[in-house]
Length: 201
Image (cartoon, rainbow, N blue to C red; front, side):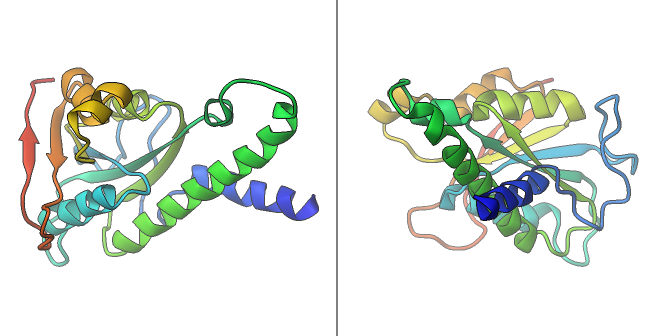
């Protein structure tokens, strides 16, 4: 139990992690970093589509040696433990702490991997917020007054998209900024193919 408690505290610290290179974090008024750069929110999860979108974004907007015009905010949504367990039943209360710990560990892995990709990005911060990814990303756009939201396309078929709903579709219609959907090609060649949706804020 002590080991689980230590792991839980370590995972909680990852939720508020910020890269050391960031000069200032978002202020209490919700505006982007005091660097004065416009904010770009990038949604990320454990999928390969998500990391492809991160690679594409870094290659095109944050390449080494190139001027970096945006403050990059990498945002990951952590589902509530209760939503993962589903319908309450016998033993549910005992399961919640363990499920919560697993979710926090998964979020920490996502952020750690994102940091590896962003090792040379000078102005980047990281957030893990609990909730549905659609709401988490749209709220991040509002909170940081972002000029752009970037995410990967999971490539769901029509049936699965109808059942689960599409995060990218929702954000395209509800985020008050330009929304860029990066689609991973079937035959993966690095840094190519982009789905681009623009909507005025």
